[in-house]
Length: 229
Image (cartoon, rainbow, N blue to C red; front, side, top):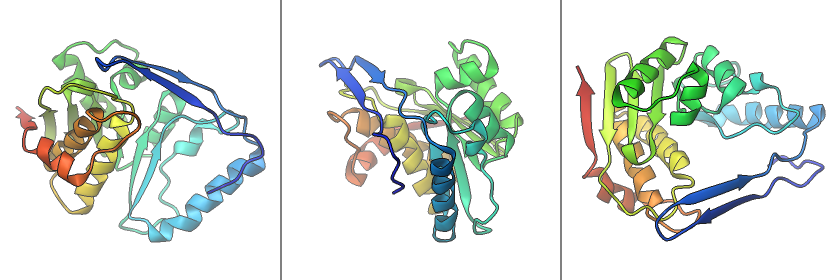
């Protein structure tokens, strides 16, 4: 934990029984240069004990976009890194060639300067983002699952239909499960399947809840994985 002078932001989430959700996210306090430096120092000091460095979420005012550069300096040789950001932070993170970058549909559209609406759009977007510098791409699509792009080609992971209660945090659950699966040396396709399973299972739960392994495994059995020829 890195204490800062000002109070951190408060985010409000309003969800109805049909799963429709509205987010009211505050910008948050501006961080001083010394506070940003402390955050970076704590991260670097922790890297020796980490197999993954995951940079996810928005950047507070005062933090430069280059903060998301997935720099391996100081990290163990075998460590992996993931970037889930938006705007300039996403662009800077991809340029540093991370192990995996995981934008959602809207973030990917803003990055590429187009609206992504169809399956063809999703597949093309995932491959274009990989060509920008990321080793692999996980393009998350909410209830439509995710598209993965890696050296082996394009993969689709399609979840079963569910009654979504609160989808907030499902993307975080997806990335956590994806990293967990890769840590267990599974294939990219199986990691994507686990990620979509965990995200889908978490969306079934009320509030900011994350699915257990048993809940994710139940959905995992129902996730369809397709290789795109």
